[in-house]
Image 1 (tube, one colour):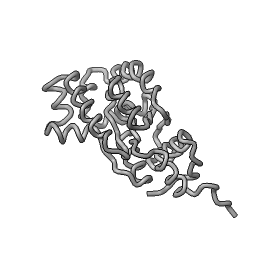
Image 2: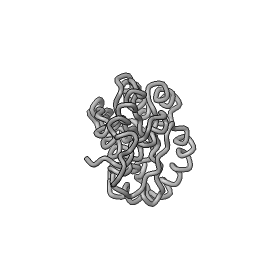
Image 3: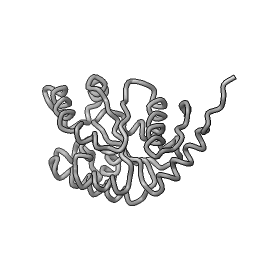
Image 4: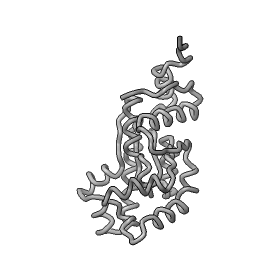
Length: 201
């Protein structure tokens, strides 16, 4: 007969939410890492609202991210992204997934540190390439050699992403599995007895 875990998931989740308070759980990482998909699962597990910063930007600007890049360029897009993220962070607790370049802004990192807990979904290049090659809406990958672009972004961004509060390696596994690992890592970060086993949606 299996013994019950010392901390049933509901108890651990309640303790985690208590420690989180009004802060947001903020996902950072490269395009294709699964920030939105895993973020949604974590939000569902913890009963929190989920917000995708790119969707918020598109809603505010009434333009798609690729259109914004094309019309205004990356610097203007990053400035808008920063304003949107800072505004969203004022209304926690919630789960927020951010664009791949958002965490590169010192002001955005500072805001996330002040109002949230950052989670880096760390992915290997083959996984990222497999995922991003299926979508045509990646402005930074409009290149003859997308793999070289991803490699350059990894070299530039991974040292900065490493400053996140929590790092969770992601891989080609079920979203529920990765989401449960994120919640377990957050429990560890807050010193809460981690929930044992995954939660099925």
